[in-house]
Length: 232
Length: 90
Image (tube, rainbow over all chains, first blue to last red; front, side, top):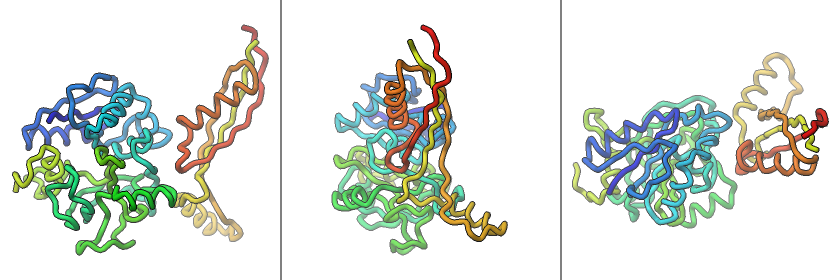
C-alpha cells in the first residue's frame, strides 16, 4: 500500500503525515504537488491539514480547482482510499466527495486542544484497529470545524452509518458540553456511502509518534495498512 | 459587440445556518447602546467587471461563477446586480 500526500500552497501537516506513514509505519509514501495529475501508483491519498491557498474565500474553495483534484475524484471513484484531515476534510466537502460543509466554530475561537472522540464503527479499514465505542484522544486545531448539513443530509449520514467519529466526553457520552465547535450531532469524522473516503477534523497524525506521548491516531494509519493489532 | 458590466455580488449565509460572528457583532452593537438591533448576519460582498455579449449571457456566467466558486450552495445564498459600464468595440 502506497501513500500519496497532497501538497497545496499553504498545506502544513503534509510532512507530519509522512512522518507517520513513512517514518513510523515504513510504508512507501510520496509527496504529491497539487499540479500533478497522475496518481495511478497510489493506493491511499491523504489531503493534509493546513491553509490551502490561504483559505481565501472559503476553506478549501480554491484548492478544489487544483489540477490534482480531478485525479483524486477518479481515484475515489475506483473505490481507492482518500483521507482528508482538517483542511483536507474541508476540501473534500467543497469537492463534493463528502456532503455538508465546515463552518465557523460555534464560539468563534480557533481551537487548539486535545479532545475525546468516540469510534462509532469498526468494520471499515480506517477503524478496524479500534473497538466499537472506544474513546480515543486526538488533537484538533481549527477555526472552521463546525460540521453543518441540512437535516435530510444529517439523517442520511446517520441512517447509512457514515459517522465514524463523534466528539464525546472522556466517558464516551455525546452531549453539547463535549462538542468543541458546535458540529451537528457532534460529528467529527464521516465517510462517503462506499466508506472509502474519510473526512475528519481531528488530527490522527499528530497523535501517532510515541515521543509525543499520544498514539491513538496511529491505529488509523496502521488499520489502512492492514496491520491489525500489529502495533501496541 | 461585447458589453462590459460591473457586477456586485452578495453572498449570504442561508437562514438555517448559525452565524456566530453575526451574533457577536449584534451584542457589540447592543453594548454601544443600539438596543433595537436584531438579526445581524454577516456575508461577503464581491465586485468584478465582466465582458459578455449581452446581459443575459453575463447573468448566466455570473450564476455559474457563484454556483461553482463564489458561493457554497450548501451553506450560502447569493444575489447580484449588474450595471452596464460602457459599450466596447471588438
